[in-house]
Amino acid sequence: MKADLRNNKDFLGGLFMITIGAIAFYMALDYPFGSALRMGPGFFPRVLAGIFMAFGVFVMIRGILSGEKVQGRWGWKPLGFILASLIVFGWTMEHFGLIPALLAMFVIATLGGHEFNWKEVLVLMVVMSTFAVVVFVYLIGLPYPLWGSY
Image (cartoon, rainbow, N blue to C red; front, side, top):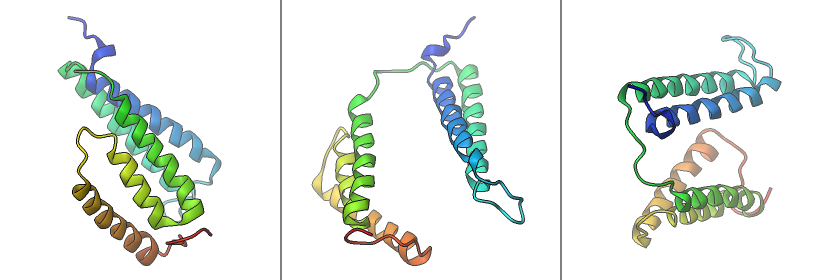
């Protein structure tokens, strides 16, 4: 029995993970690696990319063994809205600050779903934006402006 790998859900997902991990690893090659005791700026991205590729190999093997087929079609609408939300986040972050960027990102990303409920989106925006501000600005101390540009 020959498995159709072009239509195998886990095989394709694992292949995608390996590709993203390989791209990330390649991009991190320009930074010094360091050692486990004195980590350089390339240590974490390369290790994380390696872990991501290892998960990809695991998912690919699981796909080969299970043979589960892809059901349905590609979700171009959700993919487009998520991509647009990330682009808008980057631009808004630079010009208006962290909080407006997060709010815009959440609204645009949720428009790509099958259901859109303003109450749920508002709760998501408040909870996740508060979490992001507390963690990244106050706990880690990243110099992100909350409102306005740099």
